[in-house]
Length: 162
Image 1 (cartoon, helix red, strand yellow):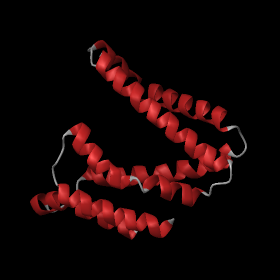
Image 2 (cartoon, one colour):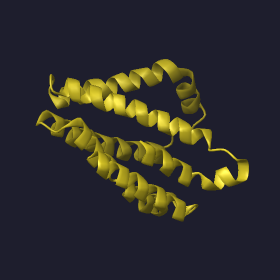
Image 3 (cartoon, rainbow, N blue to C red):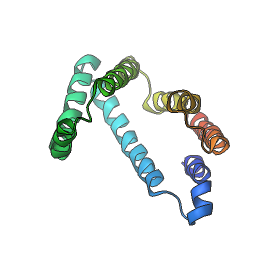
Image 4 (cartoon, rainbow, N blue to C red):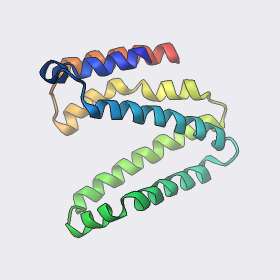
C-alpha cells in the first residue's frame, strides 16, 4: 500500500511542484482502487457459488442498471446531443469485449481455485503495459519518466503482494 501511495505521489510530482498538492483525481483513483478491491473480494465469494458465466451476466447488468439509476438524465442528454457516435460505439464495444474476456479469465481462475490476492496481483502486474498503450493509442507522452518510475514502483509492490 505504501508503494502504491508513493507511486501516486511520483506520478503527480509535476502538479505537486506547481500547486503544492496532489490532484484530487489521483485520490479519487486511489479510492476507486480500494472499492475495486472490495468488488474483487465479492467476486471471489460469489463466483464460487455460481457459474462464472451467470455471475458475469448479473454483474454487468447490475452495473448498467446503477448507471441508468444514478446518471440517467446525463445519459439521455448525451444521446440527444449526438455525443454517442458510430466511432464511439465501436470503441465501447471493443472495450466491452476486453472487459468480457478479462472478467471471464479472472472469474474462471477463481472458479478453479485461484486465490483473490494472487489473481488480483497478477491482473494488476500489467500496469507496466499501460504506458506503451497510452503512448500508442492516446498519443500521450506527458510525464513519461514519472509514469515509468511510478509503474515500476507499483509493480514492485504488486510483486511483494503476490
